[in-house]
Image (cartoon, rainbow, N blue to C red; front, side):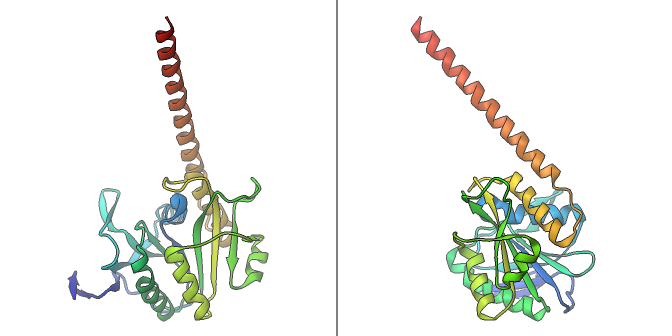
Length: 247
């Protein structure tokens, strides 16, 4: 057994820094994935609203990693609660290995049930989704009427893997309500700030969070302009080099 801050750390442990009372929570999941949309959008909401971190998840099967926020180190796998005490935000920057998915799933689902969670909503990127440009989110839910009431289209074709897949299977087996919202993205290994803004907008529509997604969209525009400028400069250098050799 490993001892962490005086706590015996088994294969997976959830360490509460602030006691979490049992009540009917909705849990929102934002894990690292395509475009890093889930964790980026939820972390943006948490920081904007200044929600409190109440727990961290420690696992011997995930690579050690710390996140620096405002000059302070934080666990890479964190749990926050909103000001109303109605929603838990579970966020990780770690890419969880296949070996770690099921142990983390079993521990996390058990902990969520013990805390009284009655609904789970996950946010994931949908790589290269063949969707109309005006469709910013599609989804799947064990309660199909929930998507209909939110005006969200059902995902007809696609795939989910990693921690989201094991969480989804466990929720279905335990008949725990599960919804996953897919945000289309053209990025895999880089942060898609634009799609993260679309995710925030979707969550605003569902939960009336009142979080402005514009800074995320503006960040994406700034990155796109910088890339275009870099490509233009590279083309100009190549043209100059080509002209030099022709003379």
